[in-house]
Length: 291
Length: 264
Image (cartoon, rainbow over all chains, first blue to last red; front, side):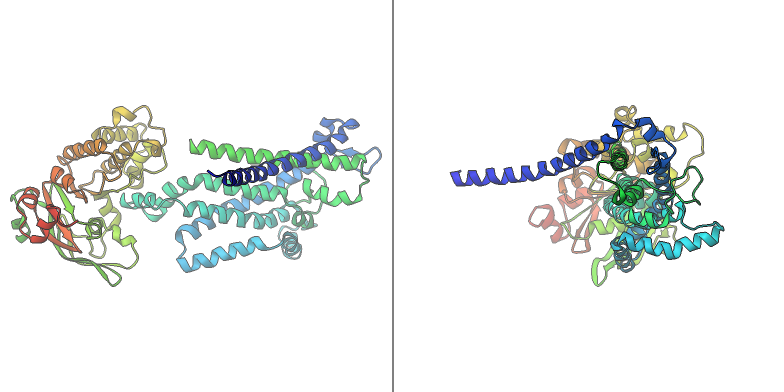
């Protein structure tokens, strides 16, 4: 090999390697920054009080930074959104991939993509003027700004992710599995639920996890419709506040370097860890399936 | 009956009979006036060059062509004397009676046990009694000579087995619902020679209880395993008769060209 070819090979390889390492490095940097700022809180404030404290009163005297109600709010909204979007999304994916006639299929797929293209603030706005008043009258509650409203709106946000990834997974199930089932005398529905869904299960789990990941991290829409009251254990028809909404709403009003400022970063760390656990779980499920 | 007279050795009753069978994919005619008779508990081979319609013919017998858009069948196809293309035919029952093995082994991505009992479950052929599924799975795995290898691994994923084991499993999956006919569409083309010879031995074992129709482009295989054979060319069944006769004394010039290697 001539020398210039060797050099070109070396440069190409090094460039690819550098790009790969850069992404990892940047993630590590972000995490380091988050951790450094977040840890500042615990010089004056105890970790158990932060994690298990029932009150989030950042500007009282003395301030209280208990994030339990915020975690509760995030969990409630997320679980509600998952309860709506997972069955609907997976069913829609099955319909699009296996049942719908091909023309309708194309139409539905672009519809789902369009749904993904709606900015979250627009969804939040639509939620405010439609879902929120509807909940207020339908359930006879004093305000429609509730965890349920957040769940409904977030379900709409998770749905495109779930539908399109699950549809991909179902669509890519090899044709010969289906042929085998039909040749044994299975009906279309038996083929779908006994062969196609198990074959696509790892992709469907990934779709659900990514959808939920999107819900956990979503801020704007949820801030607009959940009422932002940091209170606990009251249920799905009461206002709640999520971790993300807290950071977004309060970051602008804190003094840099104050305890409150550090507390918001600590929330960021908590959020990071939550999504990390979700992704890890998804990964473990995927690997167990592949075994 | 003319169909019985057609039988080369004059014994065994016909299981599948076709008369004037035409098949169209849209405007393309893939099968042209096929008349044949498949004898009970024999191995019938369909040979011919690629694209001659032999797989299409096989897929007529369990109506798998129904899945192809624009496929249309005319003429008579009888299974045990009943027209399978008559309106009101129970397609699911037909496919239970006429099982099919594919070119690429296609066990489902489920456990080995789940694969074997799949047919029982979809046809609701088991009582909800503990151990009965296991017992039926054992019987059918024994009849494809897999039981000793797999009895301790029934919970493992079937798609991790060797190709030969996968193909045998696919056969076991059919046997469990007690079919009459086994259709085999190039069952050994993905396998190595040793595996192929073991599958061929298995076929000899299976023909004691089942009627087998095999499609193959491997003439030697057809010569080795089959009792009767048909040669197809461009959608026509050129010649049909005892395998020995087809290979040693073909009546048609086109058959002779193929079996002597001049065409293929």
